[in-house]
Image 1 (cartoon, rainbow, N blue to C red):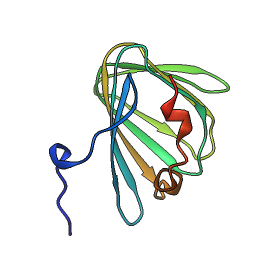
Image 2: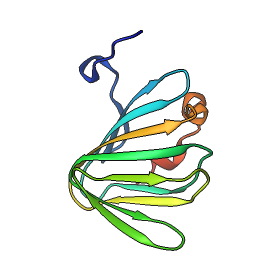
Image 3: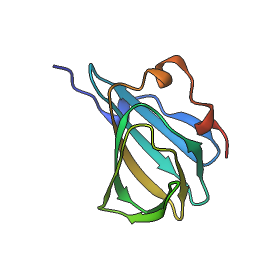
Length: 116
């Protein structure tokens, strides 16, 4: 058992509009993303199933076949290997849950998050 506090975790400034905090467990990765209005997560895909819990704000998810917007209190489920892009329509706070662990993030293979 291990207790984590967002207040104690490093805040990684990915770019001027996006801050990330990450917890890697044994089988899952949990991240907290602060996105300023106008932030963009470039199109990418990963082997992980993803659940994005939007705490506050509004995000637009762009998939190959459709575009969906979510608001605070909603959850977006993204299947493994599905390409997606995310745009922050307003200042937003999101919690992302990934399974399995984001080994690419552990390796630092996350350039798509570092752009704008």
